[in-house]
Image 1: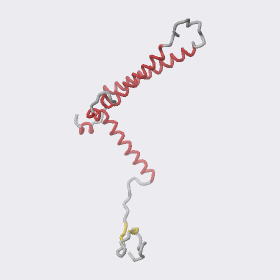
Image 2 (image 1 turned 90 degrees about the horizontal axis):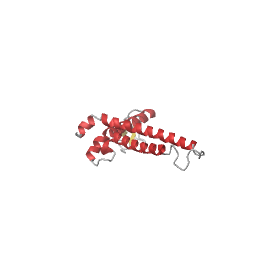
Image 3 (image 1 turned 120 degrees about the vertical axis):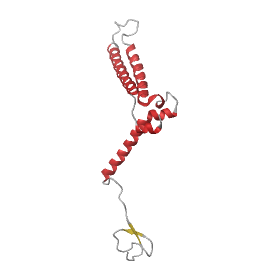
Image 4 (image 1 turned 180 degrees about the vertical axis):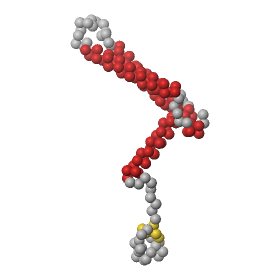
Length: 155
């Protein structure tokens, strides 16, 4: 795909969207497993009667949860930025294609922010300033001045 085609169609493929949401789901599941395991370990912490000399019942849940959060984060990153954009594939041209929707979105957000600041300041566009040059001393004066601010000559 050429740069002009990418620029005109900055869409993310359905496969990448699915990978992104799969990563988010794995991260949520991992976080939930971590919390469940952590709570079960914390509740059994003072109870040594049920543990014996073996490992506590829920010791694997937090570890599995952390692994799922890490795997989900990697999948989410690849889904969001593509293989080349996330650094998994080393291809600069493909990375530009993968990151194109984000670079164009960021430029649009910057333009919107600048426009918002200009509107908040009271001027949506810069106003043109007209100055008059004095025929005798060549100094610039305001548009409505009747006399030169430098030499005092009539304008």
